[in-house]
Image 1 (spheres, rainbow, N blue to C red):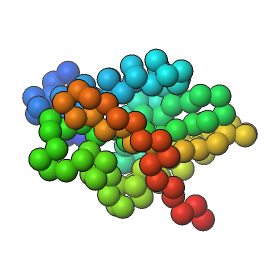
Image 2 (spheres, rainbow, N blue to C red; image 1 turned 135 degrees about the horizontal axis):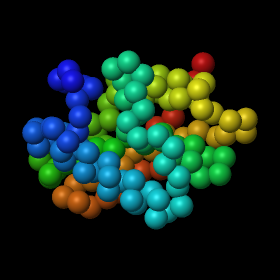
Image 3 (tube, rainbow, N blue to C red; image 1 turned 90 degrees about the vertical axis):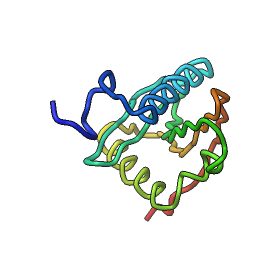
Image 4 (cartoon, rainbow, N blue to C red; image 1 turned 90 degrees about the horizontal axis):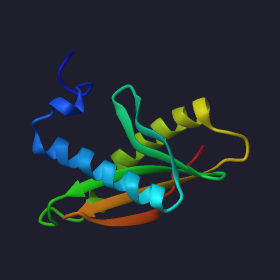
Amino acid sequence: MSSGIHSDPEHWSDPRQQRGLAGEEQAIRYLQACGWEIVAHRFRVGRIELDLVARRGYLVAFFEVKTRRGTAFGSPFEAVTGAKRREIVKAARVWMDRHGQRGDVYRFDCIGIVDNKLEHLEDAFRPGWR
């Protein structure tokens, strides 16, 4: 198996990668407890990745999950920059084309986890759909 982006999470030694995966797993448990069905985890479009895609009825949310040990470098939500939002929207468009259903309503949410405390920011940003 090649190294880098397509590596197997079981072989990751970088604590940031391990923390990120643990945060995504925590987010999945939280969302499922809130009635969401996880329809994709780490959906890839080239080098771009959607952390989570979840559905609740006709509402489909694309989740960016940011996990931090503390806030010394700012809020996890501050890490979702304009460039990152544009990447998320590009990948979301591909997901919609492949898996979207008539009548679906789409939303972009962020989940920030600091020291295992989860915060869910609904409708965190809106793309300028064209």
